[in-house]
Length: 544
Ligand code: GDP
Image 1 (cartoon, helix red, strand yellow):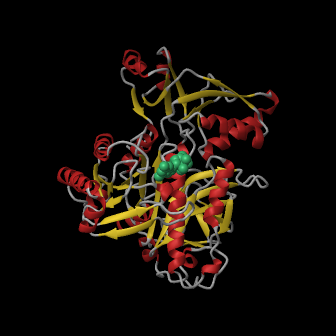
Image 2 (cartoon, protein in one colour):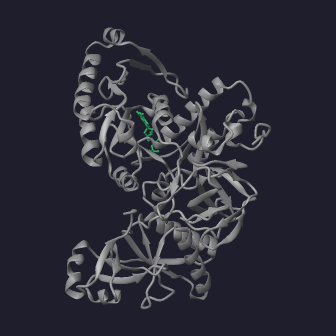
Image 3 (cartoon, rainbow, N blue to C red):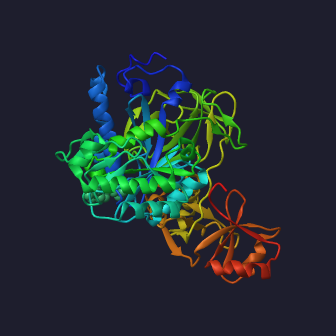
């Protein structure tokens, strides 16, 4: 592919100093594409930064040439995240480590929950579940885990903040097993209780990795690998205790089996302190050695498209207004097969129309670099992509349709109206655009009319985003009024409208033609058969 001579564009090949294997299959095989799922404050940003910096330090130490073309994008990205306070605009961070290219897809870090986060999980091959040692498995972690479980994604569990007093390691293993249903298999086991993190035992080799704190800001923790005799001498009771508890877990949970991890039956567990860089290098090694590479992705009919088929990908996220000056729409694609080359004209599956890719970027926060080439597992941001929608497939050559990204069950409902009745046109246009982008679900009914659609959200922050963008971008200020509904179900019935007779239930319509019943509480589900014995209500969401 002759990419080695390019110095300005950051391409996978230049990332690896031009020493990349030349075939798509080989490039796919060295991609690791994952996301971190966690509850706010568990340390996701800290871990993200630590992973990227660790990888960069290792790469730079090992690289013999080409260093000067590499920019300090990671820290720039983090800086921008800090400036903004919350991360809602970044998509993916790419770095090289050992012989792999790691794509870390960002999940919105806000305490609120939006569908964006779920959609990202459609675009990864693996997830890292980050758990605060003191808090255990928290609500948002579990919600996100459920999405991973429905997708059958392999999950690596990282117990973070072991340097702070927290739960007992065995107790955490029980919690993981009970609440995720996956068998936790520790690949490292802590030496020292939580709050006294001395290092980790490798249950397979029984070696001891001893960590020592280094100056703040250093990207690598000082780690020393010792044999069991040295460990026993140095750590005494803490070592004996670690060996005994690790043996207990091994007896009940068995040894690590790659097959069980990939089949989503077991989850490898690591102990870490991201803020001290303890365990960060181990996590990178585990990603490289055990996490699945970008592989053939099944299409909507379940037929896998081989990675070396002609180019294909799907949109997993849309973002508007990233560049305030240009009000543009960026569609983030996950590459599934073939090589993405900037400038190639793709086919947009939903419309059959050509889509030019003159403007393709890797996007880090609001920073952009033109991407020339991308391989399966990589993320590309296409600019001026207002025609593309979440879930859309794009390809060259043989057409392909990837499975639609599922809708998620909304739990918050508000009616939107234009403040200024003279702006009805702008209002309609804005709502439709935001619906297409997947910013919010829009439900309509004849009774409510065009000027009073119901917005349905997974997390209430989605309403704020809608109100803000309607005013700023579409010139239509909106008034939102909360509705008393708390859940939604898809209605399958000859005449869904009959459900409107049930007190506390209203039938609305999605623009794809599906009828959706919204209910004030789940007890209303029990009333349905009395009114409409033939109607069946199905959960929205998941791939099931
Ligand atoms: P996020 O909300 O999940 O992105 O969490 P952050 O990365 O912002 O971390 C939340 C807080 O926990 C910050 O104050 C971090 O410095 C702190 N933190 C993260 N990892 C660790 C750790 O390993 N040990 C300790 N003691 N603090 C940590």
